[in-house]
Length: 259
Ligand code: ADP
Image (tube, rainbow, N blue to C red; front, side):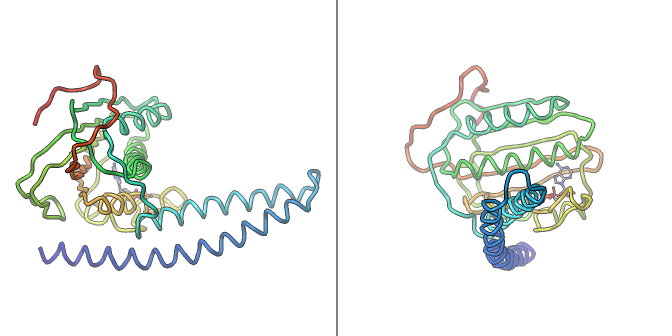
């Protein structure tokens, strides 16, 4: 428990720091962007300098994406919460990602009548995408990803770094058949800027922002992995307390209720 609190406090402090830096850095980038746009207006299309300024614009955009992710970790940016069927959301996101990696075989098990959750859809898509991108990088030669959604009643469990309070949750599991990781790596993966990837390939922000987003939805994210055996991420999001209607996905993709 002590360890969990320390970790939560550390994440909080890093979040505040990262948020402050991201905010100031973003202002700086906006200044550069404004000036490059103005410069481009004054440079004729034939001028070879144009290409260089356009390259600066692209770098600035990359920088802005990075600060957006940092801000996402720090305070989640602006949230637009809607009652949502995670099956539908994750089905759509999986379709999009699967198109980019034909060498990965996907198994999707969506529980029928999944409880609705109150989420910012864009942010939750981002979480799943971050998990998929990492899974993909852990399987450079291809492999498999299994996605499972299900309704679970918890009576209060200890899950990795958290104590999860009792309640109704929608649980999502993402399992890959990649290279996995050891305990030391596992202990640090949610830390901002922690990466084992080479410079230019990893920022160490994907899981930190996934952690931040899930936490901002009063949810929990946990990891289990063995070197050489693949990795499973588990996300718990509280089921909506309200009796809400949501657009659901096509029934033939669904698994019978297992709860
Ligand atoms: P990045 O991908 O930029 O390194 P992340 O925060 O997304 O940053 O991930 C941090 C680290 O966690 C990765 O560098 C990698 O070592 C480890 N990791 C994350 N997902 C997986 C996975 N599915 N399989 C193996 N290692 C992973």
